[in-house]
Length: 199
Length: 199
Image (cartoon, rainbow over all chains, first blue to last red):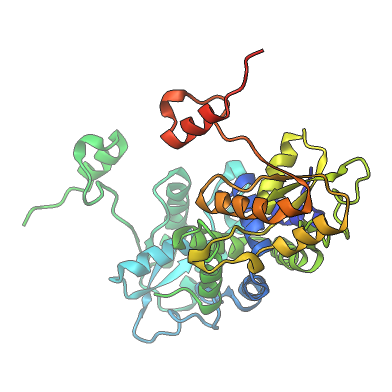
């Protein structure tokens, strides 16, 4: 026996979410079937609101419900330092650290020629325009340390150098709390290259 | 830094779903933020549809988008045998087995005096009305074998006996594929009580 059509449609729609299989989707759909009408209305209006009220900040390209976003609008944050991240989640991780007082630029992806993602497919043009226009002194490249993040970082450093800005990259090495024995050769090589004087 | 208000609201609404913590809710909300508008519209209309188009079948109380439901409307299914389950999911499990050709009655819960759930809070009245009205010959009690399911089953058997219908209960014992050594005493006791002649 099949579930009634509207239930089946809901199961299919939910199971398209990442990490949600058909079993979990069925469980959630049946929960929604039993849930109060108010909750379902709230959930679906939250879904709509996130699409209607959240847009990209025209300056740094982050998701925001204000224009510009709260960080670009914060006079206390140094506009001459811009940290470039691949993704909104990377920005949130750096923000939750709490120590960074500059601005951001979100690329919304990495260069990935094998997947057909070129420089025009991510927010590189907007970054170059910012560097051209305003008094940016340092661009910190904080894309990932996987192959695509590294390639994006290398591409950006070549692209931005002619503008006379300082281009830096996050340090690569052994994470705090981890052990030398568990590190791969590439990480150990980086950690050795980047070694610093003990004071 | 906080997520923008609409994103935060969506995270909160998603994390109220069962088995979804704040981390998963955040991951799903950010996926939705990046997803195509069409998908989000589809998901929210599926949520609404399930509430608008699905109602309880007036005969057996199952969730259905037709009136009566496809099982109650199926002349090939014996109307004189009614299987009583606690929940819609129990009915779907029995249906996926495929061997049952009678009808159902869904209680939408079990008696649970400690939680304040009495006979008027679940669909017992509708079951009694069905037994009173029509030619039901056998009521199969298929509530769970936990304390609440057993109590509900015991209550129903006392309630229905005066109507002269045959009241049966699903067999209790060792599940197929399982081992005697892993069974608890209560299950072994039931299995022993319910032993059958080997032919």
